[in-house]
Image 1 (cartoon, rainbow, N blue to C red):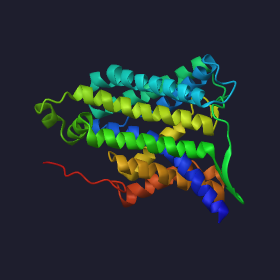
Image 2: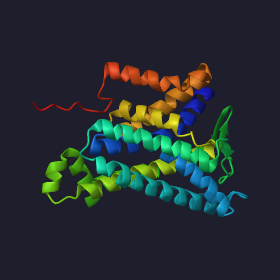
Image 3: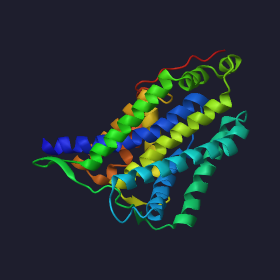
Image 4: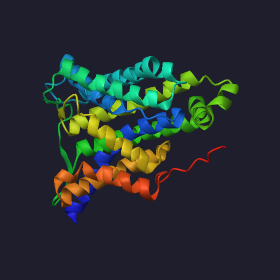
Length: 300
């Protein structure tokens, strides 16, 4: 039983990271009805930025709260700026183009970031600096809860609370919901869709950036291709919860994290990457709109 609860804690921590990345997918889809496949690479960009920022600030030599916060803010800022640049340079000129053009562009940007990262960072994996010293907060037999796991859950919860408040209690959030509901009607009400879309990309990129630092302190091996598989799993999480549904993205991320951890703990670890795609196939067969998604009536 202790092992089961240990896997649950590990799964929630991993699922929180997937949830942060999945939110970017689902927010952009809710606004533009497009899948930003370059989103997972912003998570990678944040982790690599954190690596260089830690060395530049000389906080990699000794763990400290100040070092973690400094690197966290720098990395999130860089990933946010990268998301804004991608939207402005690559996606905005194709706003009226067929969706296939946007999809191909997103794949191209993803490849550019991955192989550009290999040129700058090098293809070999590197260890992320220990910004936070791992410590056991609570232990009961085989059940161990560390400060890193609590930090991941706390930061994720705080970011989700800030996102919920922004969407439901600010003018920008109301404008986001209006654009997602009907872009043309929102324009008639005086809302500037370009500004709202840029803000959505910025928020989604910031959440992916936060996930990059959180995974860096928990799974310290980083490399330029590290965003591929987590990005795909986060996309599966968004589809599982109902693409376009923010609550669904969080539920889907936690579900994928729990499923992956339980598979690793009780079966063969080589199945950990396959389980997300098995879940994707099942959800498309049983409930294509996702757990919390709703079907849209097609006007004819």
